[in-house]
Length: 90
Image (tube, rainbow, N blue to C red; front, side):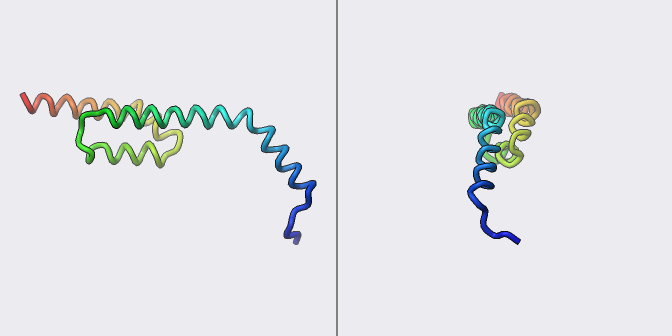
């Protein structure tokens, strides 16, 4: 069993990573933008923090799918809660 890598293996690994960067970098940037948009949308909702916590966990824990789930489903659910709270006040 070989414990340490030689320079040749490290060069190959580095070359492989550099080859993947053009593919991985846009995916990472798009994922980051989607997470930021979802978090800003969630923070702007005029609801108590207790209603936001489950969606905050979904956005942050379920990496790329969490923000997409929140933006497609969760935002509508929270909008309905806001509308119900406004109706109750009147």
